[in-house]
Length: 307
Ligand code: LIP
Image 1 (cartoon, helix red, strand yellow):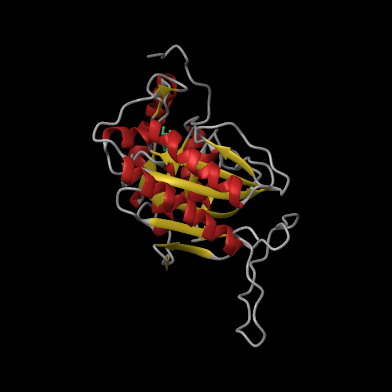
Image 2: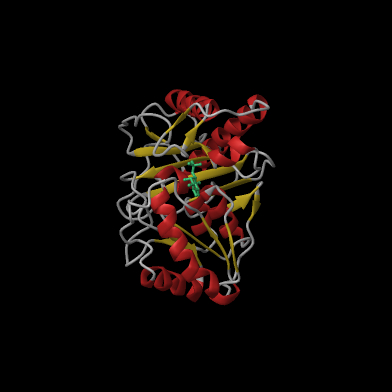
């Protein structure tokens, strides 16, 4: 029996909770439930957070850089990812793994774990208290525009806030169901966003920002998409948009948001993904999408604007 397999109910025991209906074409391996996957995601993300709290050195150094010389990876990113992969190999041996810091692992179960050991690595590096361990499991292709996120958890390392959700089961923070959130008009919306690791991308994002800022209440750049999407879920942000997100930045947070009534989309009728991810509620979301399309937020970037 691997984790995520529920026990057989004893005769006369209370009826099993209603299982959420899965979208057409999505099936779970024998004996696996959304609730079981959710519990494992929480266990993994919080174990990752404990490891970071335990072992964060006084002065964090950059172990290497990736897409640009300001895209860092630290020893802790790697240590947490290794811990997550080791546990998944033991507890879900047939599942695939897609993680920020390691090679893809193929699987035979149809499920893929999408993990970000430290989302908000620059914040972790500088000791800015907004970074998280993000763990999700999806069915279908590991592509945000086509996958079905089944369960996920975002664990904020410094303050311990833990958001989790199961498909069709709703979302909670620290075990308490999130309260319903109403849409705010665009002009009174607090908007979360972020900028990429390439100067050309940041130049393009700055231009778009000059179009967005006059139309909204204010902007927050907090530095970790996984946490931004959870703040959007609980109404601490009204809207969120960012170009360049990787699947692991958004997998768990997007389910927390949609399980509390938000929509997560892309531009020009496409799904969310690297091209653009926009999240929010009501008319304001549609207005922001239209504004980003008019501003060419998914348009070509002038690579000459190199650092
Ligand atoms: C970060 C995202 C953030 C974005 C950063 C970076 P990382 O992910 O969470 O929203 O603005 O550029 O992509 O690299 O810390 O996992």
